[in-house]
Amino acid sequence: MLSKVEEIKLISRCVLGDDRRAFGMLVEAYQPRLRRFFMNLTLGDEYLSDDLAQETFIKAYIELRSFRGMSRFGTWLFRIGYNEFYSHKRSEHATSGLEQAPERAASPIDSSEISMDVKTAMAQLSEIERTVVTLFYIDDMPVKQIATITGLNQSTLRSHLHRAKEKMAKTLKQE
Image (cartoon, rainbow, N blue to C red):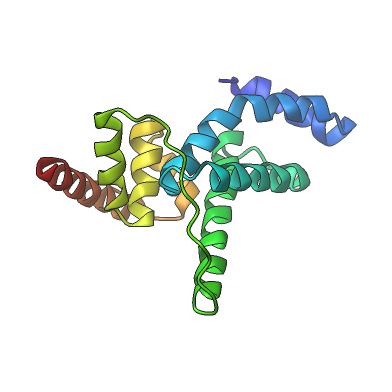
């Protein structure tokens, strides 16, 4: 993970010198985390996760001049990704009434029983609950940073975390 100073240097190189290699370094630093974030939100759909990650990085590159440095680059990037995911869900919802698209088979990430149990438990959560669980437990982000990304206030976010833990525990006990 890059330090804040390294991020600022790379962003400066991108903005001032249109240095695409510097942006490539930012992509390399954040791509695994962003992709994992989307894999959890999409319940393992690799193709959709890759598409969303790519769209997120494209939007981040285009809007990089608007980055003010008030938060870490990662927080800003995940906010773009979060918005991208929900834009996709809205457009998917809008078209679902017109035509049912064939369901894409998600490629298995890990076939172990534990992984499947966790996937099953995650599938029982609402999208917002999956989002906060992924950011808090998997990406190890603090509540304040998640609140910035999602736009939720911290107490609401803690409620979602609590409910998600209860739902997952109930699902895992049943398994």
